[in-house]
Amino acid sequence: MDKPSFSNSMLSRLLTVFKGADTNAKTFTPKQIAQRVKLPFTGLDKPELTICWKDNLYLQHLHDLPRSALSGPVQEDKAEAHALLAKLVNKVVDTESVIDLREVYGISEQLPGAAGLQNLEALAASQQCRHIRIISYRDFEKTITQAIPHFLAEQPIKLRQASWLGDQLFWAQEQNSCEFACAVVYARRRGLDLRRKTCISRYTLNLDTVLAVQKNYHMLIMPESAWSDREFMAILLASGSPYARLTLSKAPHPVEVLLLPKHKQQSNTLGEGLKLAGAHDACAVLLLLAQH
Image (tube, rainbow, N blue to C red):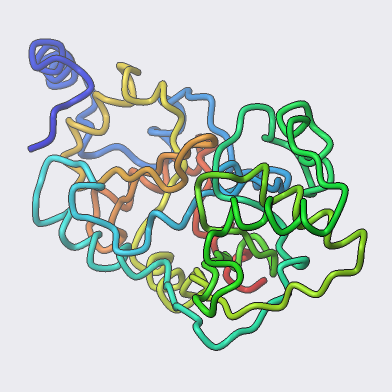
């Protein structure tokens, strides 16, 4: 069993209070739950696209999701949820595409000050790229081979792409990003052909899996404060609802979801009550992203 957010003594006191209450949590209706739970619910917002791969909506960690990514009190409930969630994101490695590197949109390295930039030109003109000067073709060759040592060889260049971010390609290396950006911008301005063999990791949301999750679970976006909220925790524990927790989207925009199976009465009632209280269903957003 995972370590709870509350101390065991605090949970015991909460449960004692609830057992002495006039209304048993197991008999609560969705409306009664909504009246008791007051949390600052928010939705799953898609941040503005930036050239930094990891600063965008970060769902690719769901591919091959480890069992340890889910937390909850009962192993069987977590295993049941994991069986679906591990299939939410597909990854296909494309080794057939020949790409002109001038088409690459962004980078994978997290550079200070690069978050929020919308193109490589902005990065190349930034303070952290001021030390790179490309005046001649020789300068260009020197710079791009610093970024990609095998640039002149036949070895494929690794790129990344995620369907929820559109068709944009991101350079997969996590070093020498300034050199890469400056070389690509120079090639764009000079009209240099940079067509190369590539190895592209393509991530997509599995529409059938999203529909299956929506059919079987309330997948509710929860505020961080929920796990220290006495009223919510008391209802969650006293109702005996099976559940699992998952960080759906990782930093820098972390989003945690609460998974409540619809086929079990207590958890379905809790899910309906939380929706009435203002909780957003993550599946609605995932469906839009999967169908994009």
